[in-house]
Every structure is written in C-alpha cells, then in structure tokens.
Length: 461
Ligand code: AMP
Image (cartoon, rainbow, N blue to C red; front, side, top):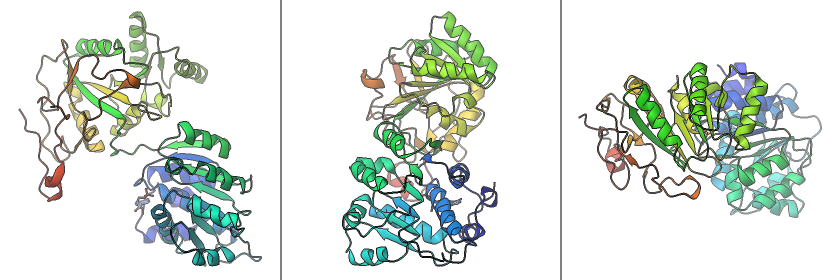
C-alpha cells in the first residue's frame, strides 16, 4: 500500500515523501479513503498511530479542491475557514498546526490559524479578519470569538473533533454543541476518540450522519481495562476442563470464546450447548442473516457465550462481554489484540484468558513480541498443568518487555462490581514464580531500562 493509492493530491504525496513516509499507517489506510469519499467517521486510534495525518490529509484535500488546480487561490475570497479542527488542549492545537504545515508545505499560500486560550487576543483577531483555509481551535476561546462576532464559521465544509473523549472530560460538551450548531448542516464531520461509548457515542450520534466506525488496535497499548492471563494446558481434555471451569464462574457476564477454525467454532458451540450453556457460534461461513441474529442474541443477552472466529468477531461492541477466552490461538499476533479488545469496553474492566498448549508456545512468543507485553501465567486450583511450563525464550523481544498491565494487581479485576479473584486463579509470572502482591515482576521496568543496560530476562528453569 502506498500513499498514491489512497487517492491523495500530488502536493500531499510529495510532502509525505519529503517527510520520509513511504507507507500509510493502518488508521491512514482506512480513514483517508473514507474521509475523501465524504463519509462521517468515528475513529478510534491512539497517539502514535498516525491519526493526525488521517484527518489532516483529507482536510488539506478539501483546501486543494477549492483551489481548482491546487495552485491558484479562489477568485472570490471566502471568509472563514473551510476546515475547523477542535482539540482539547493548546498542546494538541500546536501539534495539529505543525502537522498541517508539514503535510501542507506544497499547498501554495496555505492559510492556517490557531485559536487557543491563555494567549493574547490581538494576533487571533487579526488572523480571523483575513481569509483562512483551516482553523485549529480549543472550544473555549473559539466560543469567545464567536460571541464577539469575530469568528465566521458559515463556510466550514469539514469539522474535525480530535480527542473528543478528552474534550468531554474537560467539560466542553455544551461548547461543542454550540459551535457545531453554527456550522452548515451539510458539512462533513470526523471524530477521533479512544472510545465511543457513553457521552461520546451520544455526541457522535447527534453531530454525525451515518458515521462509519474505524477502529485500529494499537498493539503496544497497555490495555489498562483488560487483564490478561495465560493458562498452560497439557492436552485438549485439560484445555476443555479449564474452559469449563472458567465458564462456570459467576464473574462471567458474557464471554466470547475464540477458535482457530469455523469447524472448531461449531464443534465447541455444540459441546458447550450440551453442557447447558446459552451459546451460539459465529463465523464467516454462516449466512449474514443468521450472523445478525446471533449478534442480536448476544446484545439482548439471550446468549451468555459466543464461540467465534477472528473475522466474524471483528468490531463486536457489546459492553457486557466480561471475558474473552482464546481457546484456539489466532493465526496472526495482530488478531490477538483485536480479540482481547472485545472486552474491557465502555469503561468496564475485562479479563482475557488464553488457553495454550505446548505447541502454541511460538505463537505466544510472537504475540508477546508484537504487544511488547508479557501475558502473566496463571493456574486454577485443582487444574494445574502436570507438565512443566514451556521455557521462556531468551531471544530479544521473547519474554522481556512490559508485563501485560503495568502494576497489575494494584487494581484487581472486578467484573462489574463483583469481588476479584473468584474462581481461585492464582497469578504467576511466566517463569513459574509466584507473582507476589503487586503482580508479576516487570522485567524492563524502572531506572535500569533507562540507563541503557540490556533488559533483564527471566531466568529459564
Ligand atoms: P500521531 O498518531 O498522529 O500523533 O502521529 C505519530 C507520529 O507518526 C508523528 O510523528 C507522525 O509524523 C508520524 N507519522 C504519521 N504518519 C506516518 C507514516 N505514514 N509513516 C511514518 N510515520 C508517520
């Protein structure tokens, strides 16, 4: 995938080449074409994912389109920006402004203004008097300029709400609604936010038309709301016993159990149904109508357990999913991140349990390298593995890196208010040592990592 194939103007691809960027990031690959097609977008991607460019590039495309050939200015001067970007903080305003200057360096005569609080009004008033292509603003100060009639927003074609969740946390909800009401109803709206649950989701529904949801898993993110555990199984029957035990725990509100194949999904769903679980399978081999009915059953809580394959489970957003269980490992490390992201949604905590056999050790290592996090090993009383745990890999990126949750153990897993530790799972680090009261010992934490010394590795036993 190249930037040319995203349909960007030559002035922009040239700037990207100047910056040394050859390939779009996943969020850019998904968001840029959709934004260029004029869709409203809800984008979940973290800082560091390249999300700024994913809206700045389409924004600059709007500016270029208004210029005709991308070089000439409009014949008649248009007052007020074509693009308005609202951001929560001055720092973010600065970053976005820099990104606009960077990616817009070959857009001739590009006029960008930044309107933020805590600085004198003079320069901002001057900027607002002239023609502007893009305005980057924090909501409070923009409201001041609107109140004094200095900010003209009647020509905005694209509204971007960057880090919308933070703006709501900071109390900007009324300001955002007020500002949005002053814009043409025909405008396009792009929103980025870590989550789209609760108030952010409601705001998105009010400000956008049939928005498309784009979710990009950040693979090195700490997943603060998701506790991860690894159970080693001796063989298939041990793995089934572990699964059966976990599913009978009261803390399981709803669970998604992942299998590697469609056949396994059907087989396992039948087996769990025989055991009396309210369960259904979901995979790409099923007709769409049935898939929709299964998902509806999950949402309405008619189902407690869903047995799914990777493709079918992408994008499932059901906040009551308290557990994700990896019964069959994914083919790609990236899919692990998508899988565990089905739980811990909408501000709730979740537990992601991986059941692995010895032959899965390579995949576990690839996942840990990909996420740069260890998955702490755990056992269930009475179901401990008989065989010794596989030895950790000493290769770089093997089992070093951060633990799955920094400081795991500070905040015990509380599935929606129930006591932690139900089910008797004892937490242990991968090398088999008891995890201690503060959770597994981080291997590359603290000052050592900062002194440039090589990270400590767990000793193989
Ligand atoms: P952001 O997630 O928007 O904060 O961007 C993170 C960093 O990645 C910024 O320093 C960008 O300049 C950089 N960046 C954005 N897009 C790309 C790309 N396609 N390739 C390499 N770096 C990029």
